[in-house]
Structures are given as structure tokens and as C-alpha cells.
Length: 139
Image 1 (cartoon, rainbow, N blue to C red):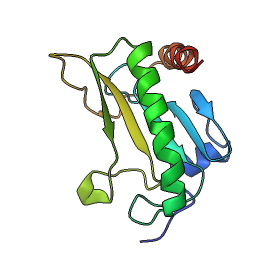
Image 2 (tube, rainbow, N blue to C red):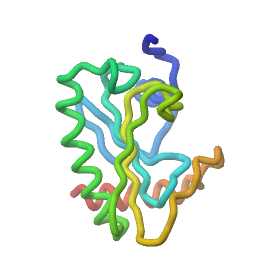
Image 3 (cartoon, rainbow, N blue to C red):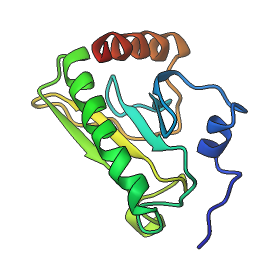
Image 4 (cartoon, rainbow, N blue to C red):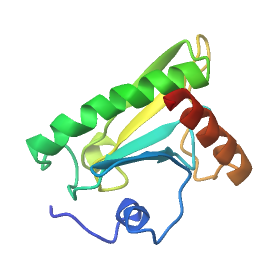
């Protein structure tokens, strides 16, 4: 399968759709997931177009993983989490629903299951406040 530049993340990267951004540099962006599975659920994606890890340029992968780590550390701190789940899905059978390479960083708490991706969007004020917590934790 080829990369489809009309996917929602490509639109976010082009500024056509707003997001609650927590980090951006020349290579990547991180923003709050609008349907978080836990408070602080953050998405990290490279700006370079690739469908998923299966077709990504290894140089892009080398740049994105240190950012995933940085965001994970910040999320654990900002949301006083007991742990962090880092997830990345590939192709429909692998659970991928948006076909632009991205990583999920999800704060986790002992004894609390993740909320499901129900299609119900979180309130924008909550996402904005969570983005501010992440920015503060990132320094």
C-alpha cells in the first residue's frame, strides 16, 4: 500500500486541522490524542510521510525514537503515572486506523484499565490543560 497524503495526520502536519501540540521540531510533532485512553495520551509522528514502520526510512526511525522516549518521560512525570505504554500499530490487521506512522504514549496507573477508543472526543479544554502539563514537564 502507498502513503495517502489525505490522512488526518498529514492534514494536521499541513495545518489544515488543529491539534493540541506539546512539541514540534524540524522532524516531528507530538500532540494530545483527541480520544485519549488515559489522561495525557500523546501521539508522536514524524513529519516525513510514511504509512507505518514497515515502509519508513530507517533514518526517520532513528530520529523519532529518542523523541518517543522524551515524551514518555514527560508524560510519566506530568501525569504522575505508575507506568507508560508505548504503542505503534501497522496495517489494519495490526490495529492501525490512521495510515501515517505514529506512536502512542499512554500514561498508566496500577489497577486501571485503558479506556477504549470509542469515537467520543475529549473536551478541548481538558486536552489544552493536558498539553500545558506536558509542555511544562518537557521544560
